[in-house]
Image (cartoon, rainbow, N blue to C red; front, side, top):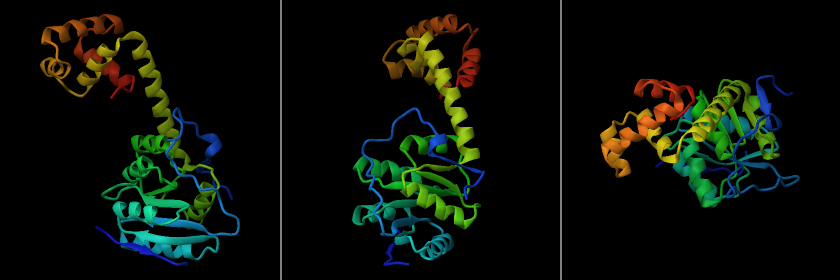
Length: 251
């Protein structure tokens, strides 16, 4: 396991979007610990990254800011969890791509009811990761290619209760989310819960016999359900169903 290093001290941008521009379909988890900003006290930051050069470089940059205090640096996700358990943390700055990645760290801390405000620092992020981060209530997502001063501003904004995410990533991901939800809504209106479960298993590549085993029904019953699904959705068979499910964003 890596080390936790405790430290005693140390313009708006067109590519970024703040909280008022980002809407999610699910509320923030109720187990978040959201400390209110304390006047005249530096923002207490824990930073985790499994690349030593990045860890030391970013920590040094943060230490130059009079209103930011890096209280711990962590070389992996596990030790960042230990740091949050042990310290009073305002903002947790997490690398997305550690062995125990930033999203997994967030899930653990939310489950324990001790998750502070979180900023994800990453070289790249895909749509599914962005959606998961938004669902988990991430405060900020910032790319490593951004200017250092933007990271400082991001931390300050997130600490103040705003959301700061890179516009291109979140815009693309939210488009994907809206498309999926619209597609799922259409399917839920047309199909029963059992039929929808069968369609999901087909999308995952299961054959009728395996689906029957999972649902504790005969293969013939699965075929009967599929016949009804084909009729309801107006498709001609399994391939047509797969293509339609993909169009609807069903996974």
